[in-house]
Length: 338
Image 1 (cartoon, one colour):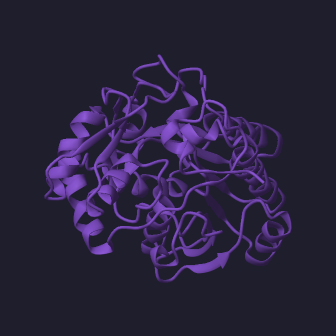
Image 2: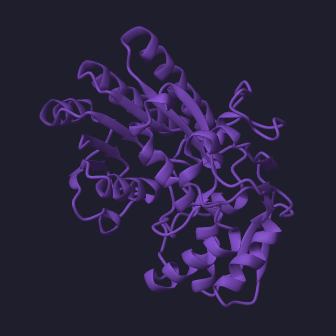
């Protein structure tokens, strides 16, 4: 059945893919994005696009009043776990308070279901494999913000009857990723560096592991959730099962890009060494949509797109709030707050 749907972060990576799947399902899609990390050419044809921020309370109220949304897909975020330690105010304003603006509007306008992309950053460290039953122990402000939104959605359901579905994706990569982002999305960073004849940079010794997840195993699941009421008011890990080290990733990306691996090791930063999830729950309810694309196949698909898209010159983050303990490689790039 056709619904009126809001997708935040529609010009971004996951948001643009989710919007495309919703359009294919026949929904009317309104997209909101402030273009801080996305691009208008990523927005699928057929989306009614509104440029603006979820932190703008008046704009959020206006959009909800005008469009009478049946469902909300909230994907807008500044998802840089490592950097979030040094931009706490920015992080909580965008990732927590902006989300609350949307939840308030969803409650006031009786939205049928609020779909939220959280993150495995909520788990913290030493909970492997990460399962939905584990008690979150986030270790960075980004993960703290995401978990706070999860808790608020649970409260909003209990208090106001707002249905929700929470997804915790991890290390998602693929077409439409922001290749110019210097602080997140290691596969995109590697490809961008290769296209600029630069060495691939690794923080620490490269033994840290992640289960890199191809976008087409994630976005279809998120988009389908509103049509599966049995999944309402549930939390799902979503992504790949097999973890790889960053050192292993170097070889996969270099081969896909047709390059000889060149690596520059940087001083280690404070990050969770190993992060991967269990996915029995999402396979039980969405297994028909998950193709389990291998890392090699997924990286090859992304590399073909990246070569056509070309390198992007990423901007240094402007507005560091705490410079203490900032990784040296970032300290050279980032302008301090005024």
